[in-house]
Image 1 (cartoon, rainbow, N blue to C red):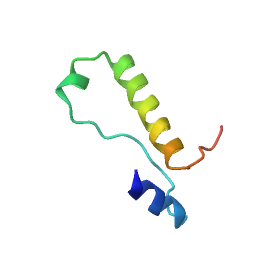
Image 2: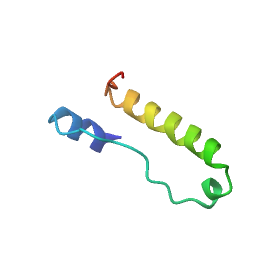
Image 3: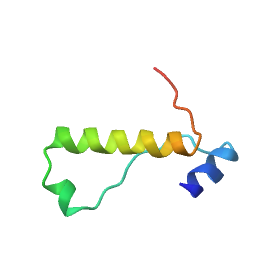
Image 4: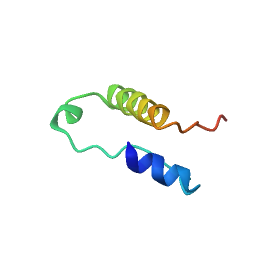
Length: 55
């Protein structure tokens, strides 16, 4: 999370997303894996103080 804060603080955080290598994630359906990845990504960004753009 600290690296997210540093990069975001410099104004260089343009695109962000999960990269997962996990046997547990491999066992999930695509939908469940997507939900879990999205939830986790949003949580990490929020904890780092990064606000998400709304569409």
